[in-house]
Amino acid sequence: MQRIYDKKEIENYIAKSKYHVVLDSLDIDFYLIRYEKGELVSSPFENELLFQIVEQGSINIYLIRDDGTRYSLSNGATDYFLGDMDIFYPKNNNIYVEAAENLTCISFSIEKHRKILLSHNKFLELICISLSAKIGAMTVMDAAPASLTERVMSYMKYKCDNGILKGIEQAAFHLHCSARQLQRILNQSETSGLVKKMGKGTYKLM
Image (cartoon, rainbow, N blue to C red; front, side):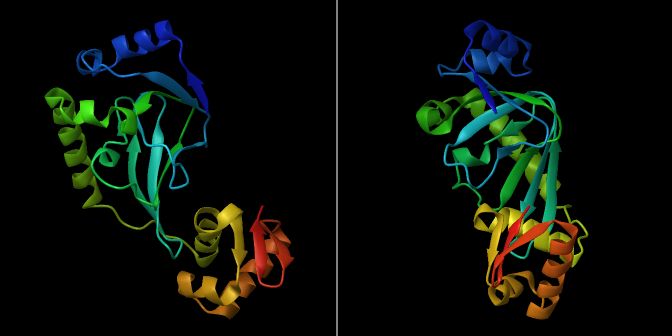
């Protein structure tokens, strides 16, 4: 991730944005953020609340449930809003946004500018349109088919601190499988080089 504060470059991106009229009327501190393909743009681990508008590239948005099941929520490209729900609601602890390709976003802090945002009618109109479209998309979403191995890998990546699974019984409970099934998956994954055994009942995702 690279943050860019060059005023001329920021002005150029805003001028080319579909929302330039509204953005020009907002008295807030804009900057650009560039992400590389595969990099997390937003995750529950981030403490800073950012509003971001995709200007170049595309993103994948998905939800990871506690059992490792992955739901595809949306695919976003140019003009897509990120952080619109965070203006009104606490951050969702299960939603992840990943750069599907190299990405550039117009960005600003939600916390710093929340009062301005909530009093700006034209900006709120854009947010209403965005949220309505997202709610409509969520009504037809379904869980992506996943094998138990895929669910275990997702669980370790997104639900375990630093990708380290500790405690077979507890993890098996969350994954809705038996401890024996989980142990077999972990043994196979260790042989394949996907995980490394760190100690009794403790495995690290590689």
